[in-house]
Length: 188
Image (cartoon, rainbow, N blue to C red; front, side, top):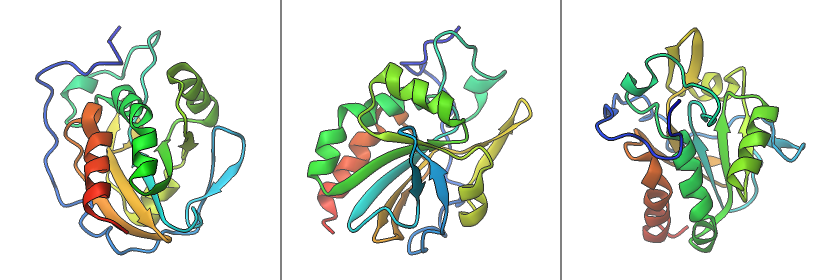
């Protein structure tokens, strides 16, 4: 079992392979994904203003081992710590101009709902088991244990266009603070 709340030291650091360079300025595709509150969320209609959509590979659970070799994959480890950082800075993100915050992975809605409850997240998690957002936007993915998963990245969506992409995310346990600093330095 691994401590899913704190990434271990000396993890391999993800490198910028340019896989998100094409995202800023792109229109968000028409796509409906299930949210943890039971509603369908239209990614292309998140509302006026900015929305933060952090995308991650796989949230671990205290009672479940992570996939084989997880810690050797650059950028894979840290999903729970990242969710907690977004939770802890949620009100600050809203105060800095984000109208909404969402997490998104390929895990199903029931799995995501458990994460929201266990971590007491004040925002919805979205499920994309078919990786339809990755296909629509050509988002970076990787494979492990027969699974194709999202690589960790965050999109700031402004009026249905991608305004900024954070990629790679090198410190997931501090990433919400990086997004917060960007929002404060980049008024809409």
